[in-house]
Length: 156
Image (cartoon, rainbow, N blue to C red; front, side, top):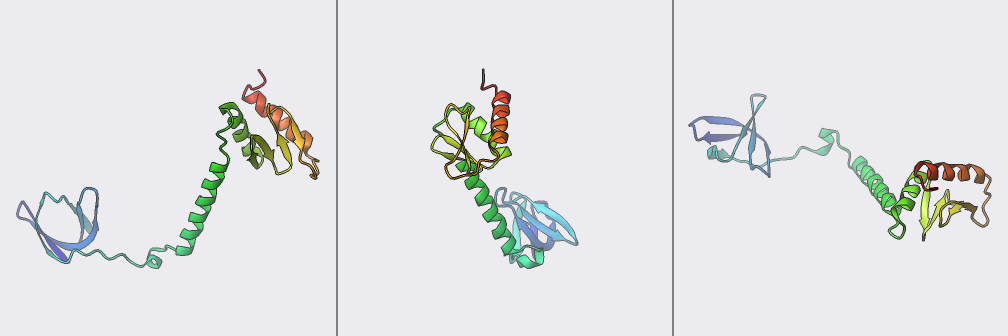
């Protein structure tokens, strides 16, 4: 518990709830209500202003879940970075992005690799099957490529 002496002469006693590092404001919990004090209002503080964080388990926070979410976010960021190819123009990048929504895609130099089985090379209007792959979905991938090129008006 601390006591705050304000410029107006009022004394407020309560428990330190928070300190805002940006505005340097102090938040006191007084009888279940919260009072915010701007540092310019405070004349004197009596008592210990040390903040104690409650155990994370009390707040329902699991370190394992946080680490799991962090790892998932890291993988998503790495995937997003891997999807960018600075060596191709924006039309080709847009085509890649559209195809990547439908099928998992990756870059192999300047070629688009779809499902680790099909390759679309410059000028990005034909699909071929990677050596040693089945290629049973080739016609479907061709149709998707053709449709996405039309949507992006790349055939003009």
